[in-house]
Image (cartoon, rainbow, N blue to C red; front, side, top):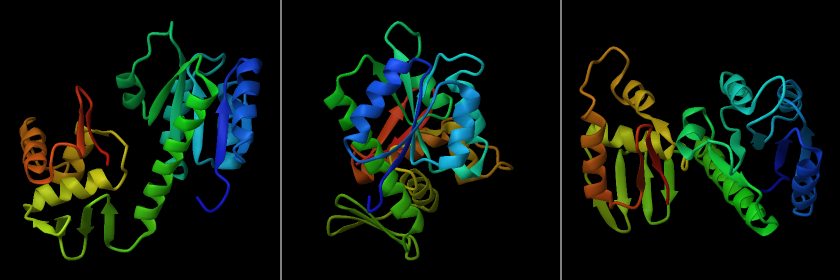
Length: 229
């Protein structure tokens, strides 16, 4: 990104905060830290970070409560949240996405691996910001979407999509890397007042994969789907 990325690090262990801060400051990021949930929320409102690295087990308010609190505020709708979890903790990728997180990182983690994960997350943030503020034309690898003309191209070949298929695709591509819950997909694509079968999403996802290829849309069993490229 053109400006320095802003990252909030939250962990109740001072040595972990120092380790994370040291490695990220070397990458020229703007870093703020907090050691508990309430302080994390205060710091988040002050900084409005691009990314929050959020420990799960903390005193006063745990990471899940912090995440839920921030996700209720539109100010942080574009902020990425990655949970920190020790290998001994029973916290899974599924739980991370269910609680509004974008990723989870298991500690201990090697510095180079950690920095690579952060760079990948921030690239996702840039893509999300670009697509949100861009015109009506989106590009993802060799896929091009024109929101005004309702057209999709894979390379030079136009792909014909039904109206709901197109709306489902544009929802998923609005936040590449984000796992959209099934309930949210149904509400956004079909509307809250329309009753459709639970298999409706699955059928439309299958059709999109048949037309676009299987690599773009990933399934998270029991949660929903995400677009990646």
